[in-house]
Length: 211
Image (cartoon, rainbow, N blue to C red; front, side, top):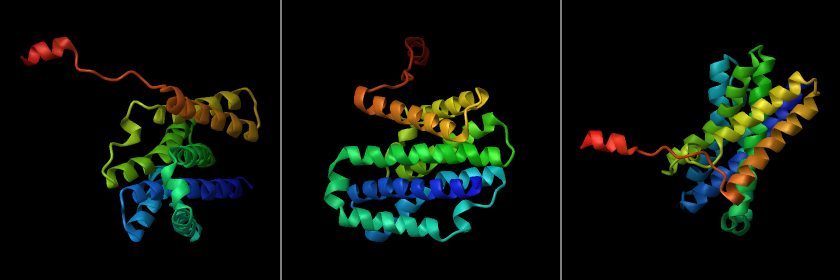
């Protein structure tokens, strides 16, 4: 039952992340194959790294569904191009939705394989973030992961909320909902109100030393 739920969440997350990747590829005027490739990388990149680190079978190699779902995402972007490429809110929606679902799958799969919770939180962050890093590198953008916007921090915060709910005896559904809500609120706050972590800046002492 738990494995089936993970599969369903991964498929939905794959669709959401693939749409976000293909949408950005369209803005860069990639051809159809290039856009599909970016969608695939965005959708499966983080989960692939997670499975390799966990010593688990790579998830997308066990089912044709993931590459097919990415194809469906590509068709969606082609058919609804004006809506999906002109409205920045649509990118946020798909990216945040995919991020939330993949963080949850990363945490739960790690626990399913017997890893401690701190590892599960890290794997949730990797699952949610690293596909986006690969996407941004391939389309020649500064990775969102490394910008001041709250992104990886939202993943980790969601993981800690999942952990806290687990310690308090909350059931699996409640843990997932609170984790998802935490991530979505932080991402929305970053977009709407500019929430961010402090930037690293070169100090005056360092500049004097260089002189």
